[in-house]
Length: 360
Image (cartoon, rainbow, N blue to C red):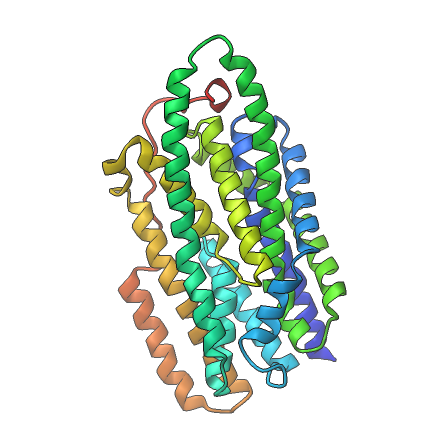
């Protein structure tokens, strides 16, 4: 009973942080553009979007809860290990200023438990990892193509009518931001409740509702800082850029969610932004250090959560302490080699940021 309570507490905490970091960020473009002027309004919209999306996240819950390891092996103890590792990994990287995907660390933790218990559905894992590559590439390609079209269209419409057009684009920006929040809730709720559903602790319907509520609460109550940060970082995007980024990311993640694939939304959105940036300055965009930092984190984060989950499973479920010592050395070596503790140097353009509201 104690383990179940711990598992539920970690799950709720996890969902709360998903809302605070992932869901709240989806309205950053609209807020940074001053299309939505009040922070509370932006957070409320992102919270509602995350809650509604979570209610439709059943397919991803099935994959997280039952698709990677057999349900009979996913005990309450194993579920608590998965959730704890994912939460600890996210907390650690948040403290050092590196953004992570909840899907990556959760899948990595499940794989670590599966390897320790010597049972893993490899076909499903390959299917998921393939989507981790395809979807960000698709996001980059689509926004690059849309960006070229958008740049051409803006050059052709530099008239007084552009003000009226920008009003409609502002409305569209709010809609696409809401879709992105919906997608975040739909895909990420599984990371918080999937292991408990797979272990039989929570019925799926109740888990989706509870997870959605805590995602919404996290977004509304604790998402202000993320919203402010994202609003400032995207200040060089125009309104049409924002629509293309949010719309493309949201639609792709919703599509993956319907197929039951947990997707690293952070990488999808970042790839979409890079695609837009490449249309404006192809050479310079690839010189930014943040891109290589994201690629490094993309690869190392699921590996680190995998190793941690493997070690904890070996200790608490298999009583194998020797392996843990060896793996601990591996973790330490990985951190040293990747420079995981160093923050990315994000270069911001000199001068006053452009106002998104004045450009479409």
